[in-house]
Image (cartoon, rainbow, N blue to C red; front, side, top):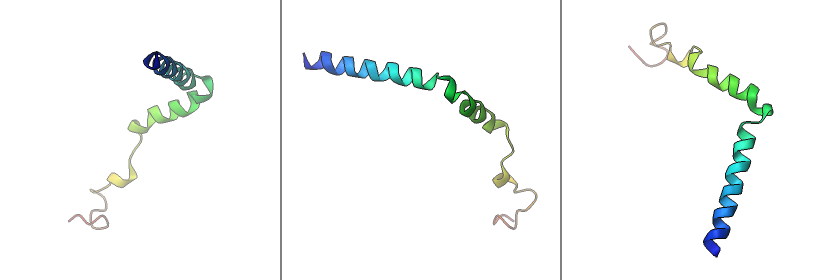
Length: 56
Protein backbone atom coordinates (compact mmCIF):
# COMPACT_ATOMS: atom_id res chain seq x y z
CA UNK A 1 0.00 0.00 0.00
CA UNK A 2 2.73 2.47 0.99
CA UNK A 3 4.82 1.71 -2.10
CA UNK A 4 1.80 2.47 -4.30
CA UNK A 5 1.38 5.87 -2.67
CA UNK A 6 5.08 6.68 -3.08
CA UNK A 7 4.94 5.56 -6.73
CA UNK A 8 1.92 7.78 -7.38
CA UNK A 9 3.60 10.80 -5.74
CA UNK A 10 6.77 10.28 -7.76
CA UNK A 11 4.79 9.89 -10.98
CA UNK A 12 2.92 13.14 -10.34
CA UNK A 13 6.21 14.89 -9.54
CA UNK A 14 7.73 13.60 -12.79
CA UNK A 15 4.75 14.79 -14.84
CA UNK A 16 4.86 18.23 -13.20
CA UNK A 17 8.60 18.54 -13.86
CA UNK A 18 8.05 17.47 -17.47
CA UNK A 19 5.45 20.18 -18.07
CA UNK A 20 7.57 22.75 -16.23
CA UNK A 21 10.61 21.99 -18.42
CA UNK A 22 8.60 22.10 -21.67
CA UNK A 23 6.58 25.23 -20.82
CA UNK A 24 6.90 28.15 -23.21
CA UNK A 25 8.17 30.35 -20.36
CA UNK A 26 11.43 28.35 -20.30
CA UNK A 27 12.11 28.57 -24.07
CA UNK A 28 14.16 31.77 -23.95
CA UNK A 29 16.40 30.47 -21.17
CA UNK A 30 16.93 27.12 -22.91
CA UNK A 31 17.76 28.88 -26.18
CA UNK A 32 20.39 30.95 -24.38
CA UNK A 33 21.83 27.91 -22.60
CA UNK A 34 22.03 25.97 -25.86
CA UNK A 35 24.29 28.67 -27.32
CA UNK A 36 26.79 28.71 -24.43
CA UNK A 37 29.11 26.00 -25.84
CA UNK A 38 29.44 28.02 -29.06
CA UNK A 39 30.44 31.28 -27.39
CA UNK A 40 34.06 32.28 -26.82
CA UNK A 41 35.36 31.71 -23.33
CA UNK A 42 37.26 34.78 -22.10
CA UNK A 43 39.06 32.67 -19.47
CA UNK A 44 40.62 30.48 -22.16
CA UNK A 45 42.96 33.08 -23.72
CA UNK A 46 46.26 31.52 -22.65
CA UNK A 47 47.89 32.22 -26.02
CA UNK A 48 47.32 35.99 -25.81
CA UNK A 49 48.06 36.68 -22.16
CA UNK A 50 49.75 33.66 -20.71
CA UNK A 51 51.76 35.65 -18.19
CA UNK A 52 48.62 37.18 -16.69
CA UNK A 53 47.10 33.74 -16.20
CA UNK A 54 50.24 32.29 -14.65
CA UNK A 55 51.34 30.41 -17.77
CA UNK A 56 54.78 30.86 -19.27
